[in-house]
Length: 468
Ligand code: MG
Image (cartoon, rainbow, N blue to C red):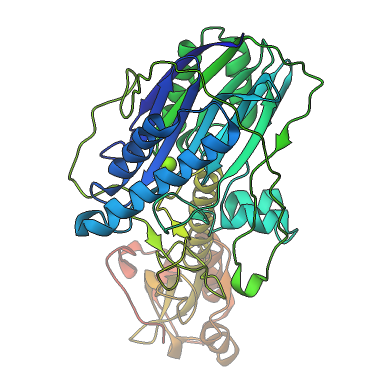
């Protein structure tokens, strides 16, 4: 006889104002999570409604009954959304794990709609058991995107299936062997968008108690940013008749969405399954917020608001909230943009580069001298570039009393040429050289007698003299 031990935690995260995830644990036979969408109250209503419907309608331990229950849940959410303007457009993902009987043996069934996930840890092997119903996942399956590209694709928020969006929904279903020692994790995207797969697996290996493991996973997601609601249901198979040699069997649809200009994708043919009578186990559904969470902040309207529509022929370049015409089962959920360490490093590098360039420009524009003529035709030492550089105008460092008329023609031309001097000392040496041999006969400036009173010191910081 198959037995389970489970732990479940849901948390609104660090950014969302309310929790639109819900969870369901009916010990011994059924475990599920749902991630609602639809701003204001819609998301939390959709996810709770879907799980309540699942708990109420699944009375037969069969894979087909599980799939039918998700179909009914879809109708329940759809009709509620259609009848209430405040809830119009709401929808939800749903991922469920149930004990079923198939061919006279107890087995496990996994059902999925949307991009919440079921993982299985078996020994060292950790694998995702569900396929995301998202645009990028479809493009990856068709070979049009790599897995790496999908992680950062601007349209990764578009999901291609959800409960409550259309009258009908296709449900993926798998049958798995019930193997003692296996550990299952059902989780919303608030976990795997914040915590790397390897870390999720390591946590599940490390913590034996399923409730401890669920709490730790939620803590890690919050540590990673907590930008979405986080829900984790960890289910241990304590005893079961199955063996690891049995392969998982897909028994439900996995048809691809219409990808518009991306073209149709491959589809799989549903495999009929046998059904049997379900044990009449008592139902004690627990939906919504749980021990690890914070009560939802209802009615603030800041939850993820879905935009429902067909995938456009050409996808926009960014998460701009437009996803085409309404009326089909494609939903986009808003997720906060993620600031990664790469972004931080890039911004810091950009700031450092900008500062270095600005420093180099200031150095080039100001850290040089030249000797030229001032406004009154006096030989003057200037700081800066002749004619100025960008916003840096040259400033008079020292005005001498040597007039251009005092200089011989060749030396007057040397001054007018305004040649660069590497330093103030070089500029002073240039002026001294004029005194030593550049003066006309009879010229007698005090500058050349070493008379300090003959020169005028100006403050380069406050005096600006236009270059002649
Ligand atoms: Mg989510």
